[in-house]
Image 1 (cartoon, one colour):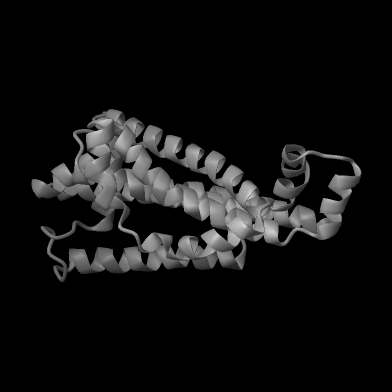
Image 2 (cartoon, rainbow, N blue to C red; image 1 turned 180 degrees about the vertical axis):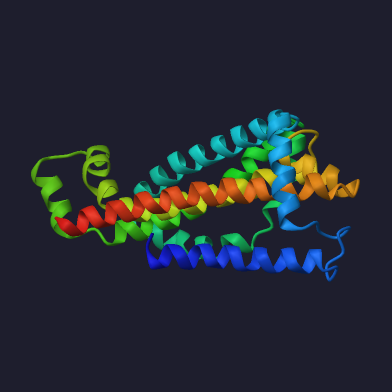
Length: 250
């Protein structure tokens, strides 16, 4: 294992050990937070019992849908925007201030329009994720050498062929950055929407446990979300590093 990997483990392990000691020593009341070891044990029990399987699958399905939609639409939109400088100049200030907009304020409207199903949750998550994908993709396309575009014109490629064969592959490392942002925002959007108003999903289960002071369910579920989001992001980061290393060897 590399030194950086050891440092990462330390950054996680040291706070966990400190929390364990504080909880065991009574500095942190167990009614406020159980020791991390009990949280891990509670998560294992929940997963083995299968009592939250339906909620977990529902949340993951909505997160996946929002993530995929944000990637497809975000990358396509960025490729189109990049080809029209006027539109790029028009939208850049909006992208810069987009996350100042309280997206959850639209949730009541979405419920009226789309009902009480999964659609409002997926739409909230999509709205949070898609702009991160667009901005990251645009940043990648900005680094594209003009020689590659001239090559595309020499071979008489149409805009779609140019995007699929030249511009987007060249911007791939930036696409991974967009993907990491998208998966994080997708989790935030879906979990937050379930927490606000839903009868199923991990967000609802966390809120229900919170309302009933059930820390041995609430904290393990929060830990599960952290593990899922962190694991996916670490996997994407690993692939991004492999891609950059492969490009550097060329």
